[in-house]
Amino acid sequence: MPKYQNHNIGLIMSSIREQHKIRTRRCILDSAVKLFSRKGFEQTSIEELAREAGIGKGTIYSYFQTKRDIVKAFCDDQLEFARSELAAKSNPDTPLIDQLMIIFMADFNYVTEHKEFGRVYLHEKVFPKEPLSEEDFQVQNDYFDMLYPIYRRAQELGELRSDLELLHISGHIYAIYLLMLSCWYTGMIPTGDIGAAMKTMLTQTIEGLKP
Amino acid sequence: MPKYQNHNIGLIMSSIREQHKIRTRRCILDSAVKLFSRKGFEQTSIEELAREAGIGKGTIYSYFQTKRDIVKAFCDDQLEFARSELAAKSNPDTPLIDQLMIIFMADFNYVTEHKEFGRVYLHEKVFPKEPLSEEDFQVQNDYFDMLYPIYRRAQELGELRSDLELLHISGHIYAIYLLMLSCWYTGMIPTGDIGAAMKTMLTQTIEGLKP
DNA sequence: CAAAAAAAGCGACCGCAGTCGATTTTTTTC
DNA sequence: GAAAAAAATCGACTGCGGTCGCTTTTTTTG
Image 1 (cartoon, each protein chain N blue to C red):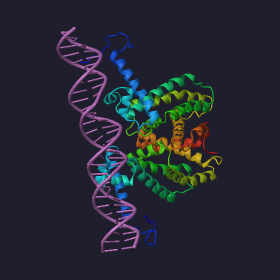
Image 2: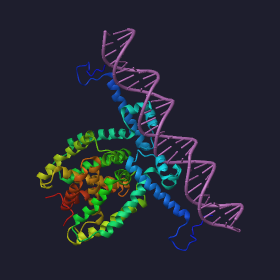
Image 3: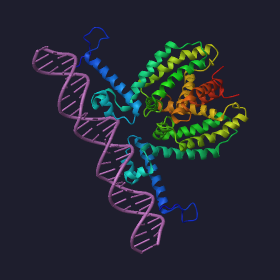
Image 4: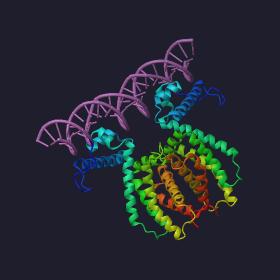
């Protein structure tokens, strides 16, 4: 019969088994970063990954449902981390464009250094096979929520129209971000030019296209 | 030794072999549309597709390099077709937004009816594994070129700023289109609401986000 | 038209993502 | 601490995408 109680009173101390599971999971993710980055996602086999992680192939599948889920887990973690980082260091009184550039260029630089992860993640999250799960939406929303105060402050400072919904504003910015990523992945814009292009596009988005 | 000349004088009449190749290619694409639409892309095996098309598995690979290339070929053809259709029926003197809505909603409706094709195609074209080939860029550019006269006319009519490059304008519109597709694929916006959302976002893009 | 050359067709085969039942390790029970 | 239960590990196995070399069909040559 299953037991859910933890014999240790505290919530932090987990059983040997739990600790071991966390270690193994980390180990798989670390090995994945190493191999996917070096050889590419498709070029790395699960067996190879298992060997690198020092475990059996089947074990990987008791931690992740699919190969792509490994990428998803890693990126979700990173996004969560980036969110906490950024929430700390953001300064809501600098001009909106500057703030957005800092945030998105940080993200973008991260993507350029983890091209394979970014690509698979974008496939899964932007044009998924099935509608996103509640949990996946949450990751997305948490990230958007982080930006809401910035937009709200910009509205107060008269940098953004106050009659627009925050969701729509987020959408516009996100659209430009996706466009820039696409331009980079397709090779249309070289890495070094992305910053300038992004700034131009964001500025135009805010100023509008009509005379 | 290979001969490239055609013994028929005209350019239209092709050899039996050529005709047969064209028929077979069409047959593969038709079977792919049928099966991918019914069962999904991943759920349809190449062997199954070969059986449906009445040919051997290996033969498919002498027409297309990968399974995803079948989708790419189909979509490129469709896009080319849509382009010629639209070029004919567009009226450059109706308001910009209306024209864009007609074009993109037609595209969008097509995607909703070929969800699997659209998804794979978007993966390949928006976040590709390798930079796009010259040929792939051409398909993209041909489509953008179709829209240039519309933007230019809108600039003349004072609906769009004349100091902006057409490429940038295209970028903004394309970004919104991608965003809407993403919202649909993720399930964030149901099919019936896409039209309204697209119109709102396009309007805001043109008017700008600042007060 | 026959022989030679080129192109197209084919399916057995290979490597890998993902499954499953057998085995080992940890936890619970008494 | 031993037996029983539960959880975790594992690697042989399955099915599919893609390859390769052999066979058949079409075209060219003389």
